[in-house]
Image 1: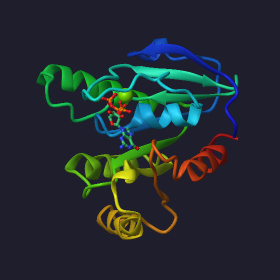
Image 2 (image 1 turned 90 degrees about the vertical axis):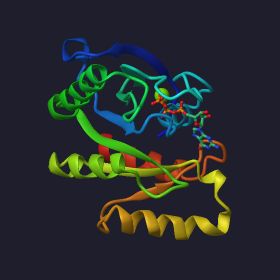
Image 3 (image 1 turned 180 degrees about the vertical axis):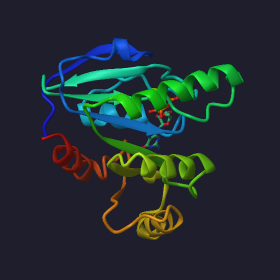
Image 4 (image 1 turned 120 degrees about the vertical axis):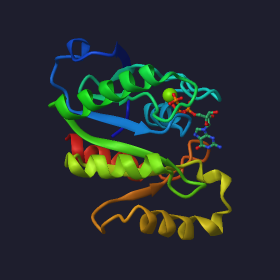
Length: 194
Ligand code: GTP
Ligand code: MG
């Protein structure tokens, strides 16, 4: 899947605002600051099209990017952003749950976790939750450029074990800096969205 055309079509908080063309769609999920916008930029071959930031909570709405006039990538706001009020967090949870359960064209979700650490409580919650709704998931461990190369396979095994992934549940080690893992992620997207 080579991306030749990208268009940011909608920033949505409500299903009424979702695009209605019926293109297959892939959602990008994960904790705030884990690297969702950075991954979508790598896949779209753009530098800062999806705005990235050292400040968690940069992405606050569902951002729909139309790819090659034939599918959507959806950059989903990160969970676990501490500095917002309880009411805002609840609003956020409703927005995500509505999206994941009602969006008929959603073909799969890329669930990002920080490749440097053990999975967080949020990662475990999200895993159980996606399982429950039977949404196809690709796990992507980010920022692996911060690990020694020799440690990457070991870290991957640890993450698979901790998250209790089955053999048919893929986990890709990825870095937005070195682009390691990009090919595997693109192949998975193609499989879900053809
Ligand atoms: P929110 O929009 O807040 O949910 O964050 P996000 O998940 O979109 O994260 P974003 O892509 O904005 O990245 C957060 C920070 O991590 C930025 O400073 C990025 O430059 C950095 N970052 C993202 N991916 C990588 C990576 O693979 N390697 C390294 N070293 N840094 C990364
Ligand atoms: Mg973002």
